[in-house]
Image 1 (cartoon, helix red, strand yellow):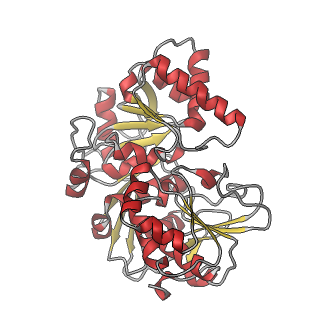
Image 2 (spheres, one colour):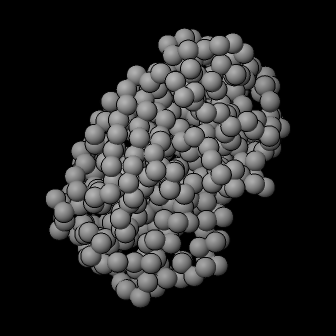
Length: 414
């Protein structure tokens, strides 16, 4: 009667594993981006390691400060490029290829039943494909680089069931913020979350990625959507290797269960400075804005840009609006479909694929006294620059707000 997490970690450790057990697991794929690979490689060298365990199972994307914003960042990135060549790592994605959590699924590394570890907290995104995926620190990643193994405590699992149908103008981001509001920022600490219900089944793969991406904002170790035909269809021609989908037993034991109905859900907004400080959009409607940011590993995918362009086409934004596509392939598709042209004509600034302003790196940093509405995943004080206020919303709410210059309800402009 094991859960998905228990089954995956049992397979990876080679022995039956139940919640709260400690295991040493074989890692299927390991990822570190430009921001964390520097520290991981430093620890790798300090350990006296010479060669990585498997250069084909390590993925290094440059996305956090891409392109480099100063000489120091450029030097650190060059050091990692040299290390990648020295180690023979073939899965290297340089500046411009996109955000790690978009790049890995696009290239078929996020697979059902696999154990995927990233040196980034939002690595739980890959749970959208039925993987056990989580983030670790640089020292743990160095250990993985050297041995291909990592110790883990098997998490207890929370079951979240979401029924109903999302209304027009309400998206998976709104559903996600609503769940976080009710579970709380620490309500799932070191727990796995399994998502079920008609509303989850209806989500597209990009929408499931948004949901699983923000599981960490409840403290979760991972968030998993059981794989289905949508998953398998997405992975056709992408999957790096064969995979075996994993499902929880019907009598699997969960530590908690939540039930939600989203039939009447309105667009949601997280107010500063906590992700679970969530209200309906009408409570903050009219809040003046200095900037709107649309992108990040949460909402920079093609579907997101398509939704934004559908609202902005033929109109003009009234506030500084910055869009970063999640990857090169998203940018190409959005260019070929006319979405990028529509955004540019609306007065939007389109920047290269990457994380940029989400972490306060560049291409959209805000200052003390400024207010930004962002489609990213965190609104902690100082996240996008010293001072400033960050509100979180869906791409639809962000687009509607860009037109008004203040937080607005997207249902009024659709």
